[in-house]
Length: 90
Image (tube, rainbow, N blue to C red; front, side, top):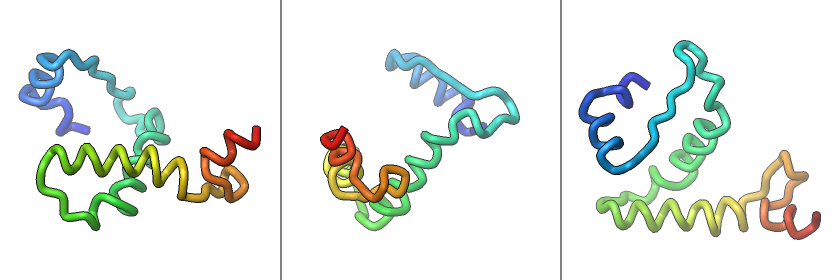
């Protein structure tokens, strides 16, 4: 992320009350889980929708996480269960 260190981006985030968190320089593995998740969401879901507005994007991301990723998509690491089914079985 150099694009996330730009003055405009930092000013916007700070102005909106966000806490900025960056990994250590040269250590891309610090945020590997989040990077993997967002890459998967873009590849499986968002790139195919042709979204235009911010509201459409918010609804699509919410649906992907709450309905599809947690409730429909099987996860190899959970023995082929969805996160929701895995949690119910625990």
